[in-house]
Amino acid sequence: MGFLKRLFNKAKVKSPWVFHFNSGSCNGCDIEIIAALMPRLDLERFGVKLVGSPRHADIMLCTGPVTEQIKPRLQRIYEQMAEPKYVVAVGSCACSGGVFRGAYNVLGGVDQAIPVTAYIPGCPPKPAAITYGAYQLLRVLADMMGVEPAQLAPEFEEPAPPSPECGTIETEVAEI
Amino acid sequence: MTSTEKRVVIPPRVSIPIGPQHPALKEPGMFKLTIEGEYIVDAEVNIGYNHRGVEKLAESNTHIQNLYLLARICGICSATHNGNYAQAVEFAAEVEIPERAKYIRTLIWELDRIHSHILWLGVAFHEVGFDTAFMYTWRDREVVMDMLESISGNRVHHDMNTVGGVRRNVPDELVPRLLRGLDRLEERMKYYRDVVIYEKTFWDRVAGVGILETDVAKRTGAVGPTARGSNVPVDVRFNDPTQAYIPMMDTGDFEMVLSDRCDVAGRSVVRVVETLQAIDMCRWLLQNMPDGPIRERVRPRIQPNEVLARHEAPRGELIHYLVTNGTDKPERIKVRAPTHANWVSMAHTLRGNYLADAPIILAAIDPCYSCTDRVVIVDAEDDTMELVPLDVMRVRANKWYKMHPRREE
Ligand code: SF4
Image (tube, rainbow over all chains, first blue to last red; front, side, top):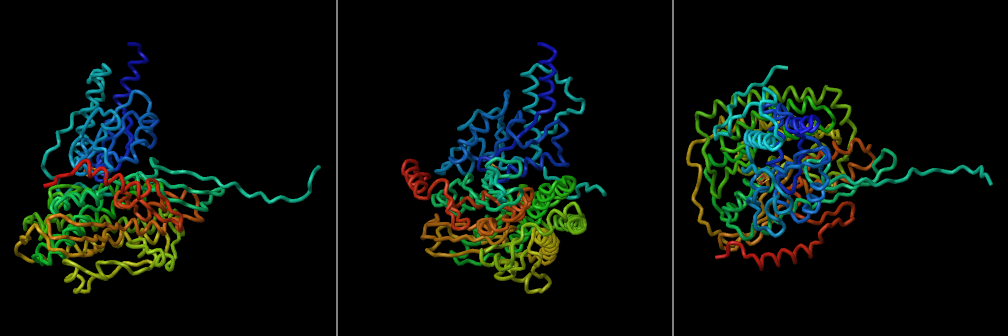
């Protein structure tokens, strides 16, 4: 593998830019994705950055059971993404249709419209689950691209798998 | 052939489509803005990307299943849909639920309002480019999310209500923790109130933007903070209280939050002050919560009846219209979500503003497409917008259900 190729691969694993597409979800998953990017869990420490355009993105986070009307748009946006591209289905709806499975205007799952790389189930998945899912995806990507995990940033620790424990209310709120 | 005649050059009108995927939009909706130079002269709203067919699906589900389905209409105000449907079924069955259940239901509604308003505040800060405050608000929102999680077990879809009461109790050990969380939230919200009012970065972007005059707001039937920001006193909690709002309003400690500014700033102030008020309401509910059972058994078959249940969702008045037919399934359920009522005034508020202000004006009604797309046709300025015509949709639905009978006994 040439040096440039190796550099590219490393960059891709170290800084995947994600793009979020709502294919008819209830917003629950969307706000949890944003919550995962927010200061408490801070997905950005893995280099994950939310971008607004599919052309800049490596990973598309899809939420929602694809509706008939959004399907052509979803496929078009998928085609607009640059290779290599990965799709993560976030939430039960995106995985299988969830509660909306069987409704007349719903396809039932993102994989009915476009290929999906990873599934994060839950209704909605907790931000911790999304972080964990993102980490697992990055690990698989690192394997596929032949990047040594040691080459990743030293702070790139495995997050704890999501637990059913609730957070504590007395969360740190920093003084400003 | 030179003409000395002066020519008036009319700036060309350009029509800009925004959406259905756009960085300024969090959900799939489509706006067609016609602009002249920098000014918006016309706006068209095209929605329906999020239409999933919930109402149709609900007709083939039992009432208990519908509680969970309707909660998933919208993830931000899930407690309102869930609670209001439970309320509607109880009205139809003509049962009274225990006092404690009423208090818990109202507590969840109010906590949900706090979370929704803080979320909105963050989005508004983001839309005006004030991302620091966006991060701060979302971090503080985690406090209320934890409170909801410790009560209901889930962060977003609480699903606390069931027909005849609530599913979980609020244990006494939790109350001091919740009160501590409320104190923390209050302190932070006071800070954000000052940020909204005194911080030039925010105020200058919203003051005088997106004017919605009182009479227009009344005429177009705006609801919720959009209407209250234009000095229209509509708030179901005060006008037509249900559940524990009745004893709460009897104390006379709470007043409807109104603003006569009629612009985006007015709507922001209404939301922030309302959050502070909701914190007080939660405190009142926790301190006055009576003891007793939390649920009443209701027979699954609901007598034939026709009811209309109203509730003040964070975005405005939410209406569930329910027809029951003596079985355990509804005959018809119609959801009128608050965003739908606010769409009509949308085109008016956009007109005459700068294009750069469009995102914050759109965000100011706190649009929730997933709630609104129960309906496919929208009238914006007597232009009928329909992406999939209603009769086509109906034919498709009937065909689908003929081919796929869902859980038919
Ligand atoms: S999985 Fe749940 S939270 Fe996510 S979009 Fe579907 S219904 Fe909403």
